[in-house]
Length: 148
Image (cartoon, rainbow, N blue to C red; front, side):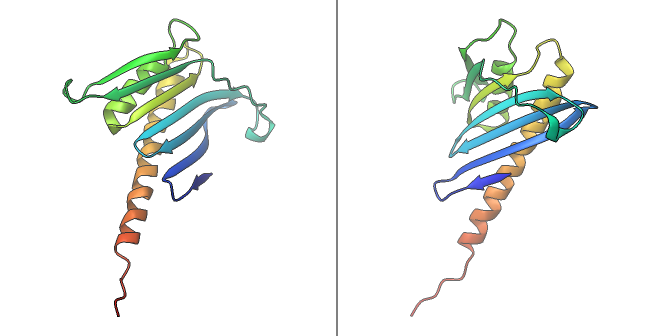
């Protein structure tokens, strides 16, 4: 599900099966050159029978600077636990996209494979959103102009 408006804000929600009975949920809110990403997982037999359990328990921010050869710097704004994955994910996404990135990751830290899977799909979804955004800009700019 994707919504956008003239102010260049895009909201996208995706549910991706990870293993049988485990689904990853990703919500992306893109606002100009910033993006907020929430990642969570639920367990159940079917997507429709899942009860929402997501929390905004941790929040991290990352951005690239011109002084650091494109490397991202980050900070944990709200810490849920010491080994939270939010800051690492935010730094890697910021380095790849050159955007200001906020990430809230509600995944069990002991499930490293789930964290990697979720991050890869998040980057893929961000690339798809950017491609749609670029195509939209190109189609509006290439529209024929009428002069009298």
